[in-house]
Length: 354
Ligand code: USQ
Image 1 (cartoon, protein in one colour):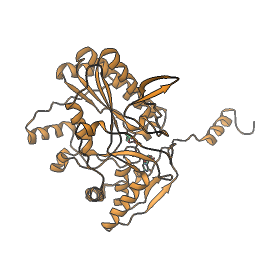
Image 2 (tube, rainbow, N blue to C red):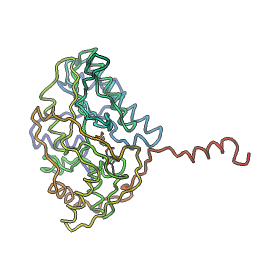
Image 3 (cartoon, protein in one colour):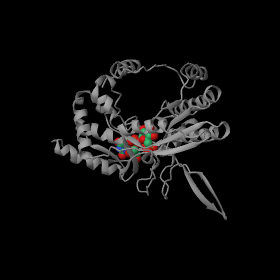
Image 4 (cartoon, rainbow, N blue to C red):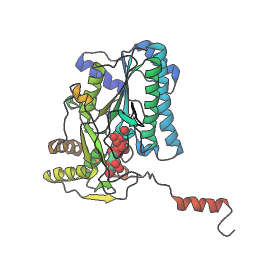
């Protein structure tokens, strides 16, 4: 659905809430832009969500991989330098991802793990095994942030967020003018949102491979709650914290079956289809990730339920005519087509008959 521009939404928020919100349009990869905004606004906290967020986009070709890593890593690097020079006491709340950890065969801790090695012990950053150039960009960011906290004393919280689902925040339900975009395409849409859109469009739900891939999930409403709690409880100068920001774990197949069951109650017949996995990822693996730090700060999770899926389906049904079925099937393949490479080498060598 069409949404008002960012500044229009800010103006509308101002009208209904009576609070002032300034808006700036700046490019984080332009250092002077970043400095100008910080100098004028003088923030106590910066919530950094300005990264390219799609794993498939980063795996499309060299240009999109480069765009992802330059935008994400250079943008964050500019921001921490600008904070060091202009507001070193400001709290940086940075959007990371649970995908930084990958799917190791041990439980995932909240940022750090205590290791005993050859009779000595240390608490170290949890090992990273990301699954795309996008997820890697967040790993690179995390390392830069750990360093900036240690060397310059910046205060940093890395929010390792899981897969977000949901259509509505409370503000968006109160006014359509505050709506944000809803992505259901194979590149920018996340899995549960996509399954709901596929159900409404009447096409089979695209479970990649076996569908036992398990991830941490959270409702879009809880994303907002988590940021609020993080900003209200800043770290000490020089402290780098990691919060694993998700509320529940599900496999892809569990989500598909939940959507199928809920859609059936609404009279929508849905087929769940396993399609060849376009990604290189484990389809059967251990997954148990600690996520207590935001709960300790007071997070009240909105858990996934059939009523919630029903309300998502309802919301999407109202925009059914606008669904573009073309974008629902995955087009980006993680794998290398070696047959093509051999053919290209043969062609480069002057053709098959040489
Ligand atoms: N999947 C399907 N069918 C689909 C789409 C996805 O089976 O039609 C599977 C994927 O193979 C994957 C899982 O569902 O195993 C999650 O995929 P996703 O596209 O919902 O999420 P992902 O690519 O991991 O990325 C999303 C956001 C990203 C965020 C990340 C959190 O786009 O910004 O960082 O979720 S996490 O996954 O925890 O790293």
